[in-house]
Length: 417
Length: 101
Image (tube, rainbow over all chains, first blue to last red; front, side):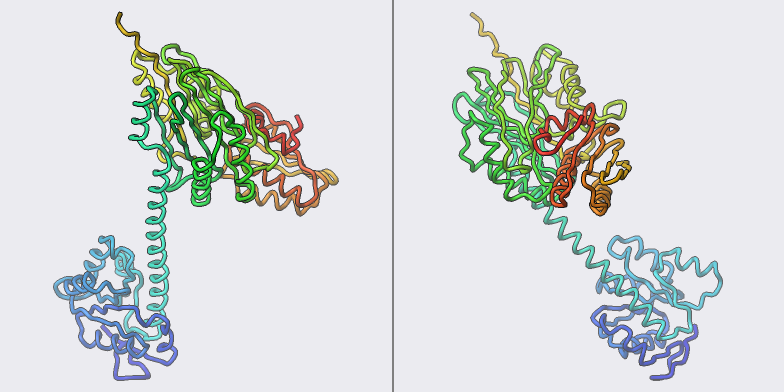
């Protein structure tokens, strides 16, 4: 290979160190560079050129095998790679570096005397980031090195940032999972109340703005709520935590959910930004009188279905979402959830999901789906079928934060006389 | 979201077609900025050809209402139909926004 004789320094075939070149890479001096070449002279001359330019973290390798070993050991920021070497040539080194996830994006500057277009294509085909034709011109070497190192640094910062964000989002997701009823929570409540319970909250991204909760108030009453904070991601998740705190710490009368919503609304109107709001339903089921008293704030209408008959009805629902207007008022509504019936609460992700014709399912469509679920003598099986029907039609992750909650009242079994 | 903005004197009408969902937020903001720059006396969103709206769409209507209020022009949502009309009724938006059938 040939090296261009420069104006400065010792005789450096292919090396031309000018003052411009020496200052070109000032900000990246702590980057580590591995120089791989079978020629000791070439290795030394490139090393000298980098050191004169301010780089202090330079290492060398004499052949392909040593190159791979040193890359694994030193994790350089950039490799200057010759092609024709014993043990393993530069092409194979490049292939192996690109095949490994940790070096797939490592800047590799090949220096070679290749002139044939086919050979040049071959260099890039094995994954080289750049090609320095020999005799190498030092200012060009340094300029290209700087460009690749700057890009590499930006990329590494982005990778580190994404990794940190992913860890933090995973942590928030675990926190969110902790504020909605778990499977053991539902099993325990089901055992103590005789209810059949199912519930899920699934964010459309790592974290979301849907929450739900269920709580036994006393011997005969169970309260339930769902909230869908508008939007997705971090802001919605933070607001979901806010809403959860309001619900669990608020001293609300379970028999007056309308006032509970009004109180929550007042607080959220002071804290939410323009365009932020939450749709809500909160209600209390009296297991003795079968009455379900509830209030809605923009939430989709609850659906009541029957465990043995193929029927379902939409309940009344009307109310301004919370967080929109401090003047909003809400209305207590009453219905009955009789033994052998179940109550379905859900977020609009369920009704926005497309039907067979590609149109949003809508409330009537959802009501029909609930009515059409094949019934089984065992209400738990019917509930499983309903669950599969509802959840099965929506991809994972869902396109919008998804909440589904079902409270079932299996009929009491007649005791033998 | 497909929308067309028409100006008739001091009134601006924005006609929506199809769906108003979370995917439309950037385009919606651009449209709203354009409406405000026209300094209308009244802005009407015509929803007769809007087939669906999600909670993000509701949020956009609320933002449009707020922008209009802060910019001193009146705002209405006109001719919602079908499922869109029911969603607006469910959310009781007529308590905040003028809805004209």
